[in-house]
Length: 437
Ligand code: PMP
Image (tube, rainbow, N blue to C red; front, side, top):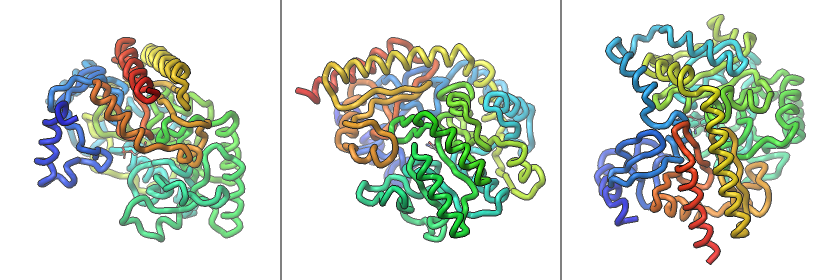
């Protein structure tokens, strides 16, 4: 690594003087050092050492459009001389809301600047609507960095607790215990456990305001909902008057034109989005039913932000939706994902590795596990952090840029081609061969 990414190593030393930990966000940290990127184009990125890499990291799953897409670049270039920030709505805000409403089947939208802001606002809206404080989430799911949802993620296997009573633990320091206590987590893919927990909470006078969840878990590799699970969750939440929020920060616009909501055919009361929406510029959105969003419209909830609906982000979102994330683009992503999944599965089979390849839309991964991963517990049971780190380095040294850590999957972009996919599979085969020597 020294020989290949020495300039990143040097920059890490320099960065550590005044940039805390040498990075802009804690998730960017890597052992032995982060890779500093200088530019990206289409499916590739170049680091400060000049290494050219196929990008499967894609900005933590944001760049389904590929880097520096000409249509988005042209839209931004046209917008910039006309001014980039007014704190007033622009026509692009209207266009994007119309298009999101069409794709996700939810009538009312607002914007934020990130996924964290979107989930924070959605939870506030749910609390306002129901007059309740408790938030229910899925154990092990990430929904952003605000206190309410920095609970029950990244938990060590022996601290998970029993299935009917999973631990509520803060993720990192600085989160008040009183906030942690308001968040309750239940296992993914277990509607029975969710319903029982809701009933127990109701008996204690603590019925949840909302259930916030990803329809497919995207931070343990990819974990799909079992048949009937989302329908059952929809039913339970409706029965108890609980706002169902699908956090589509990772899935929205990435796994289908209308995200998980379209893919799985279950419509929640709200969705939260970010990442792919802005085509590489900071953005986020919340969408909801007329009833849910009425608390925003009547002014009882403040859903605010100086940069909400920033014109540069919105023009990038508009160009993405109009020109890039088209039905043909999703067909292309589907083709690529089939190719990478079958290529990897073939390697898994031939080398008799314990695991399986799985893909959906532009996302997928190889999960190394002796059993099928259905929730956080079954994921953690088999997790091998050393192998994950090794695979990341192995890929990096062979020109395949991935998100750090086994939890992270690949993200394909519309600019990826069969050549990129074949490069990925070839390196994966090399890894399989080394591991089984
Ligand atoms: N929700 C989900 C499902 C996410 O994956 C993330 C980020 N990885 C977030 C929310 C937070 O988004 P952001 O980093 O834009 O705040």
